[in-house]
Length: 164
Image 1 (cartoon, helix red, strand yellow):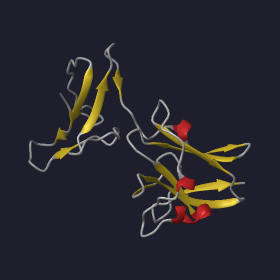
Image 2: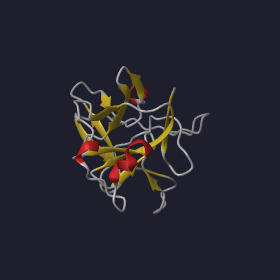
Image 3: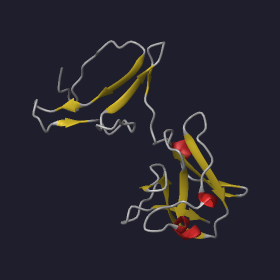
Image 4: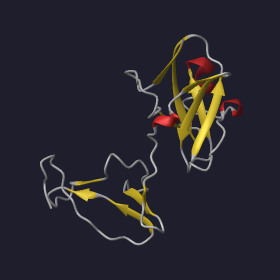
């Protein structure tokens, strides 16, 4: 039904516990298929993935979570990256010579983040000098990702963290 006053269309579907892959379509057009931006988990065909728990609750894993923003700690700055399916996640930035990458590939073990934990989050903590620092996460050595929780992104899609 819809659209409502906010332009939103709605359809209620009863789903049993399980994993579901889906997209929406606008006007039934062949090129009108899209997955909602609010769901980060995707399959190889770019379908959104939805998990329904045994109690009927919908679980939507997301890389966006305010508790995963960079945090100041007694030992420096704690970086967190949601990547539950990654084999390795590296932290690369201007503070570590971009992970010593070669032609965009990072494989130096000293920059591997620890994880994933039960939530699918990888962590790295380190001391940074006062000032603004650029960084990105590197999934499995070659997939460069801006931090969706970092706040500021520069014009080259680098995340920015400021240490005072």
